[in-house]
Image 1 (cartoon, rainbow, N blue to C red):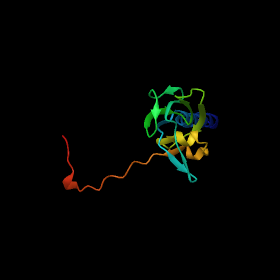
Image 2: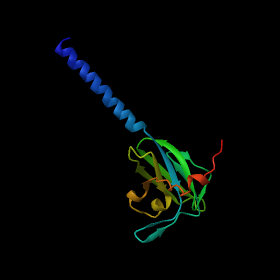
Image 3: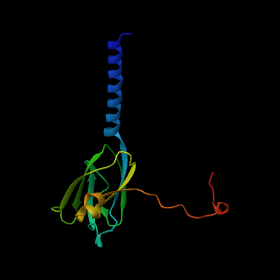
Image 4: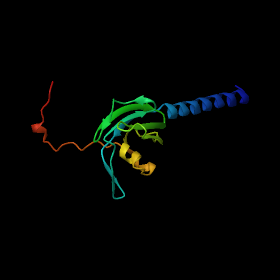
Length: 144
């Protein structure tokens, strides 16, 4: 094998690795939890509208979301657009673009933070599941 063919093969392999990394980045799937629970940011309580229609990347969620609701949607890619329309006054429409970090599989998107004009770092937070109940193993019931 000549030096020239070795360089060509190495370039092809590096190109395939770069293509794979790029496709992973733009195709990475995320699960978003669209949350309308009130949040407190900088000592200010932000609330969602009483009823709103929410869509993410053109995917309309359920018919409308009230306060203190959470809806799950699957998306792919790092950049997403959320559109929030007030059901009582359809002239009130908020459209924002946000990014999800590549290795964040499940994230919570706060609708009140977006509507309240909070900084973008408060819009998306990682999802942390609630702690497991401190139930002794003897008292757990198993279904088979």
